[in-house]
Length: 301
Image (tube, rainbow, N blue to C red; front, side, top):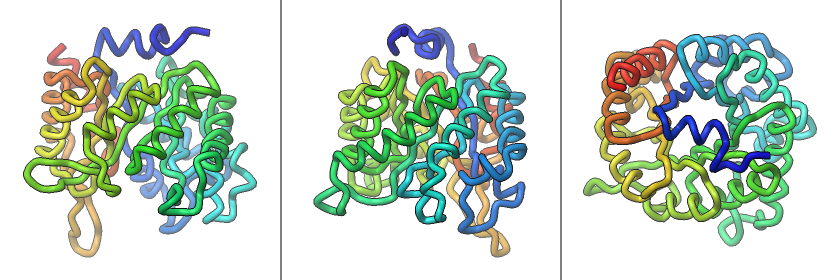
C-alpha cells in the first residue's frame, strides 16, 4: 500500500491546484431536507438524491467529492436515534460518492463529534478514538480514498481524529478548522485556538494537507487574509481552503449566502495565485459556484 507521500492524490496536488466540491447541506435542503432532520440518514433513505448531488459536483469539474457524513459519528447520529446505523450510513455514503466519482477522489468526511473532551466535557481521549475509529473504518470500507477532518474548533479533537485515521489505513488525511475574526486581523476557532496552533497540531498529528473551511462571520476578504496566515503557519505542508459563499445575511426572513459565482471565482483565482493546493466551497456554495471557481483556477494555470 502506497504511503500518503506517494499517494496519487498528494502527487497530483503538487502538480496542479485541485478543486474540491461545495456545500452538501445547501443541496440537501434544496431537495427537501427539513430543519432538524438527519442529513446522513439520506444515504440510506434517499440515496438517489445524495448520488445526484455528487454527480452534479463532478460534472462541475470537482476533483474531490466529500461524503455526506459530517455528523456521521455515533454521538452525532444518536441525536436522531440513528446511532445503531453508523456503520451502514458511513459505508453507504462513501459508496454513493464512489459510484459517480468517475476519476475524482472520494473524501470521507469526519466532522466534530458533538461534545467536549475532558476536562471541559465527559468524553475521554480513548472514548473519542473509539468514536472516530468506527466512523472512519466504515468510510474506508465504503470506498473513501482519503479522510477529511473538517470544521474543527478543538485542536486536541482534530489531533485524535487524524491519528485515528492514520492508524486505520495508510491514506492521506486532510484537516481543516473553522476560524472566526478575533480582532486586529487575527483569527481563532470557537475554542480560542489560533491559526498557528491549530495548523501545527494537525501537521504534527500526520495531516497531509491543512487549512480551513466554513467560518460563518467571514467575508470574502477575510478568507484572503486567512489564507495568508494558513500558508505561513503550514510551511511546506499543502494548504486547502473551502470558504462559504460570503457571510450569511437575513433577507425577507430567509438566511442567504450573498456571494455569487463570479465573486467566488475571483476569490478562487486569488487563492490559487497565493499558492493554495486545494480550493473548494462550504456553506451556500453550489455546483454553479464550483464550476466558475474551477474555470477561474484553470484560466490562470
